[in-house]
Image (cartoon, rainbow, N blue to C red; front, side, top):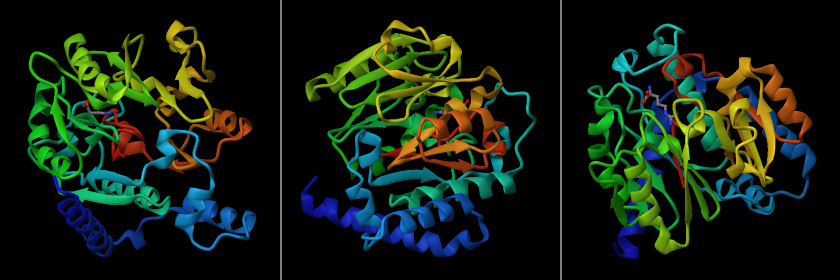
Length: 317
Ligand code: CIR
C-alpha cells in the first residue's frame, strides 16, 4: 500500500475513534484509576506540556511501551454464548460492555489511538480480538484460531490489517491463537496449547524469521493460552504462575510469581509505562507495587467469566 493511502486510512481511524468516543457515553464509565494516575503524573513532572509528550519522555524500555494504536472489537449481546472453562457463571452483557468500555478508555487515556470495530453477533468471542492476529512493526499475521467456533472471525480482520501492514496468514493444518504469542523485542515465545499447534507455531516462526525474530515453541504447563499465565511486564521481568517458575526458557528473566489463588491476574498487560491488571487481586497488586510497577486496576469480573483477560481484548502495535 502506498504511504498516501496509509495516511488516509490512519486518518479514518482517528476519526472513527473520535466519533465513537462521542457515541458511547464513556462519560458514564468510571475510570478512577486513570484519573489518579494522570494526577500523579501532573504532580510529579511539572515540566510536561502535553500528555502525549510525557510518554515519549519516559524512555521506553519495551516494545509494549512504544505502541501507539490498539484495535478493539465491541462485545456482542450474544457474548454469553462464548467459550469458557471457568465455572464463574455466564457474564452479564451490560456489565461486560461497561468493563470493555472502561478498558478501552484506559488504553485511550494512555495515549493509544483506538480503532474500534463493530460487534460480530455470530461470533460471541470476537471481542477477544488478540487471538485473530499477530502484529509486528513489519508485518501482520492473520492467525488461525484453534477453536472451530472462532475460525470465522479471521475474515473480519483481514481488510483492517491489510490497510496497516503487509499481510501473511497461518494456513491449515496450522492453528494459532494470538493469546499464545508473547513477543519480547526480537524474541517470540509461542505456546503450544489446546488452541495453537506446532504447525501453526512453526509457520509463524517462518513468517517472522526474515525480519530477525527468533521464535521458541513452548508447550504449555498450565492455562488456556501462554499469556493466560506468563506475561512480559517490562524491565526484563515476567509475571507468571508458579508452574512456569523454573522453566529453562525463562531463566534469564526476573520473575514475579502469581499466587495460585490469584492466577487470573497473571494476564496483566504492559501499555506505555503502566500495567493494566484485573481488580480484586490484592496479593499480586502488592507484589507489583513493591517491585516499583505502576498499576491500573480494571474491573474484569465479566471478562473473566469467559476466560478473557487484559491482553486478549485488544491488538496493540
Ligand atoms: C476463548 O475461549 O477463546 C475465549 N472465551 C477467551 C479467549 C481469551 N483470549 C486470550 O486470552 N487471548
